[in-house]
Length: 323
Ligand code: PCA
Image 1 (cartoon, rainbow, N blue to C red):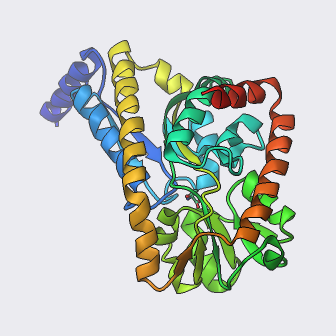
Image 2 (cartoon, rainbow, N blue to C red):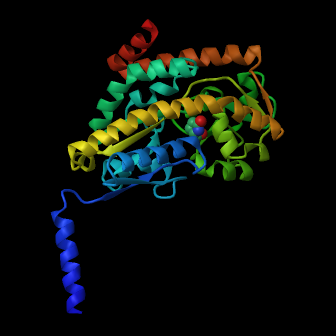
């Protein structure tokens, strides 16, 4: 008994005198463990553990298991989680700048998405900083296309369909097309489609494959509307409490994760559409009429976004268009 408490006392004294205790950071994430964003986040955590010789380890909690997607950002802001990953455009209601990556038909390729993000990144980081968050890195999803049960050749064909939305832009598309929007996290998408709560949506081939969407839907239109991003951020106080070397390790690994994640996304894009087709979906480009309708919708939504996002928004778009 005495020996045991003595040993415990010594262990405590050693731990307390160590320059910094080994820390574990739980990282809530919203997408499945097999998704490349999650795997990239796990690799980021391993990079941090290696760079800090185990002083900081990051434990990924995929699929909304720790906090559901929509709660992750607030959890990190309030310090309930020290770090997390979230689809940033889902928070465009807090700040229109968070929706810069979801303006229809503005940046539709990986190269353009990278240029747009480069123009937006400092302003996004500053906006997050005002919310008690430290921006670490962002990774794009593949281009967004439409999933439907029946063939759709114009906007008029969409009328009345229940449309799963994941941010303000997708809800706005539903409204402009006369569809009925329902907000649903990716983790609940399969179930929503199976039960008929949703009958259509816009997303990447990645999420279509994750959700085995062919079990409920038949048509994918590769309209390439935009490439939204997941952002990884830390709680400002948790970050500030780290020593300088650990902060630098986080930053360095974040920069690597941004590059690796974007490359993986691009490498996987064609394969996702192939998998959809192999499972019986009809994968095709939009009809000429649908393309025309969508271009108009894109113009409307670009104007609306510029109005909402003000001078900062305009500066980003101008920088993006300047090349
Ligand atoms: N997948 C996520 C966001 C964008 C994407 O491609 C989703 O559908 O929730």
